Image (tube, rainbow, N blue to C red; front, side, top):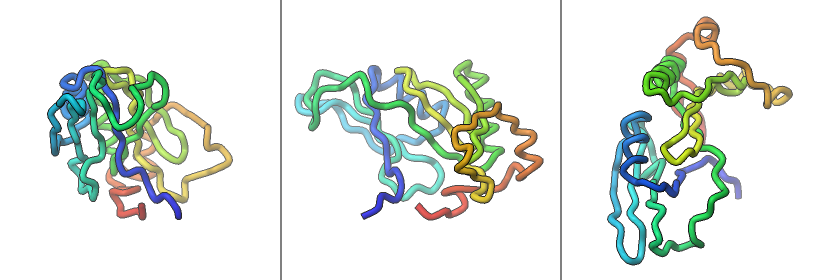
Length: 172
């Protein structure tokens, strides 16, 4: 057995509508299904990337309510961050501009294997948006190196339209 990739992430959120607005309007995920709350299950919204996705959903939001769930009650610890991938440097730069304009950009770094911008959702869950560097640029020796993001230099090196990762058909 080998795990191939992350299929989806489910986040327990304190305000479903507020979180839906964040992930839909700021990050561009598309709602594909909604599950109304009931006495047996909290309300949920399922979202998918507008890019071709083979998943039913890439992200689900579940209301952090008192309604029973199939697992234990919501816990305060667990999720550190969720990373979402864009296909090109130009797309990453556009996300950075969108987050900065909205006043929610928390950071932008070059980590060698990918270039990242950071924000947090309305519940404070860190969201990392990455552009995967070409495989030949990866180094496992400096995997924890974090440099300030310089999109202009990265564009000089690779161009703004170079598709990488899943956008380039990388295996899952």
